[in-house]
Length: 385
Ligand code: COI
Image (tube, rainbow, N blue to C red; front, top):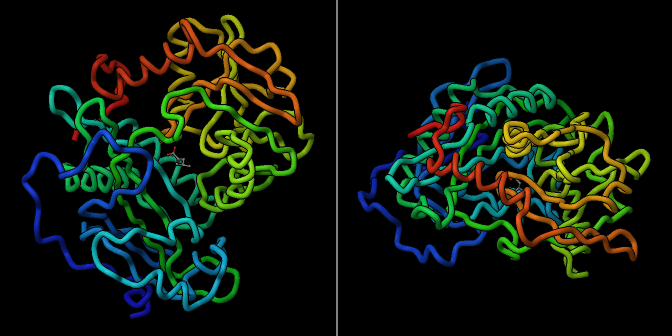
């Protein structure tokens, strides 16, 4: 059938390792992809609901050259149908999903953590599920129910348990994808959709580790504009910033901080994370207005900061406010809470406090405490597998 021909995956899992840990050097983890054992796949046709999801061995997938996601998303240059076919073939286990940035769709990111007392905790996975559902509405895609999403994440984590790093050595990053995989030539919603979840052990996102970040404001590029899709986690928000990141890295910066598309005056977000500024007892972050990603770490830090008595504000933050800021920090699932040491705009470098007692450190310590089970979770944010 049409649906069956658009995406094929490897057979059902047959082997499940009983080893507590995979054989790897946990001290060498960064944020690169380490292929794990299983992925979760579920499909549906347009106008239907997702059903029948299952685990399969983690492997490359085969996809129609006319899949909606490949044709109307960004493709990595040099673009050639032959390269695409080669890259998307089923080569077997342990090959990286080399095309993962080249397709149109939505993605999520969440983490599973192994606690000191041997439990496995997820952090607010239903928030990821809800965000994917909002994104799917915006992109005219069907989406899994919240329960289906959370169950798929749990199954993916559990089947890849041996890849969850030991306590204190990192986490298992879980990457749910929602893709229009059915063939379509005209610009219209794809006839078939695939929800896929894979996972990789990770530690620090930035090569700086936990050292302060040096951000660059590149006024030429914007991340999102009003009326666009910056507020949802579509993969099409990420490829366009690659050039800005590359340029900033060439100049020795960690990442790019984008300004608003209309006035080029207000802070928006960093390529991979949200941004906060601290001034005395006041903590502010740009208000979400359709151009800023509603980060789950952002939301959690806002709540933790309020609990700890800070004056918390979501507002338009003029770039000039950086001059008076005591501290600046970034938040994200991959990034965690990262202090910012400096922000450079044109030839002006503004520096922030990164030593001594830091607000960002104190907030992160509470967040990590909850995520790792060290602090009792009275908020019901963690989900044990
Ligand atoms: C995450 O923090 O989970 C993200 O999706 C950001 C990505 C650039 C790694």
